[in-house]
Length: 471
Image 1 (cartoon, rainbow, N blue to C red):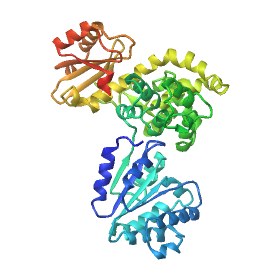
Image 2 (cartoon, one colour):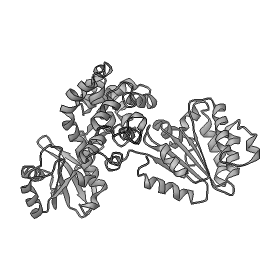
Image 3 (spheres, helix red, strand yellow):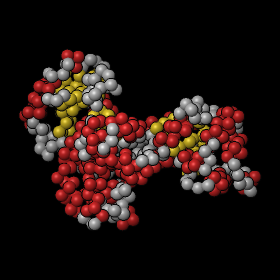
Image 4 (cartoon, one colour):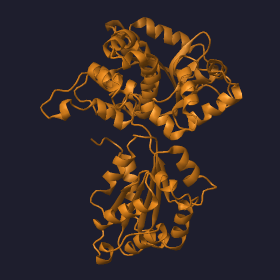
């Protein structure tokens, strides 16, 4: 199933309609949906989509020739096999002199493994031939560090040639919910809390059993967790290790850093002590993980210079990675010995509400940032949270009209009452004077609100937002 990506498709379509040479770079982590996006874009177009793998150059060129024969109806091509990249690309540019031709080289990093000079060859081709044609060349890769270093960086031979680029990121929590039409609103949010917004992972939880027969019932959320995460042979059981091995030279050290953060070490010195490295060395690993968007460094939205702040907290940014290090890795021995039920009932269920509490706060901030027009009616300039040693505010915004929204998020099994609003109003008086101007209040609840709070909220203009509103 293909969900959303409307803006990305629209951007590619605009470039396609330009009728001039276009050179687009698309990249992003494994399973984020790059290939599906490109296949959607290539539909009903004169296009050659080529997916590389870990083969020798001549094997790639032979496969590319075969793929091109299905698109370009020319007798010469039926008896021709490309034997080098330069002549291959020149041939495609010639085929795009009068009519647009889209050429996609997916998993581009594999093509460069057997020919490190390929970026230089493409640079020469583009300067002499490609930019004078109607070729739409797309280089796509899932090794983020490689694409940024070898294709996009200033020292790359291809620097300055691209006419567009996009780092494809995860789907929002709301888009992720579309994968599970049979789930309740809470179950959709829990699935997002476990899998994040990675389409390939979400798709695993939307599949039917028994070879996905149309008449087979959907599995419950519990069964999906057991089948896809707590089964050693399953797709998601070891995916984190594949992800780290693909991107990083020292995956074990990075895994230790992630495990420390998942275990509650959120400050640099705490992480360093947990993994037994100096702070300067730990900082290097943290920087790489931030570049890969696997972790994030959060500071209060009130900070004037967040990059220099010593109050920053490190958190795992990817929900699937967070869940894996929180529940799968620590219980790996039990899982591999066939105790999925025990791990689910005794390790996951009692701690899932606490785990979802932080996820829910992030979802609520996403709502304010992306979907403010539905209820807030005023655009926020900045969205974040704020904390001091004595109190915490889950959602705090600075809006374009100089007002400020203060929000509290509760992933509770019971309705939220007036005491939560009173506590929020009290905390709002503790922020600096700049953030006290024109305060407004919002409450988020996973299980509704009491009648008394609803009556008071209506009188005082407090926004009450439930899971149905979020989705």
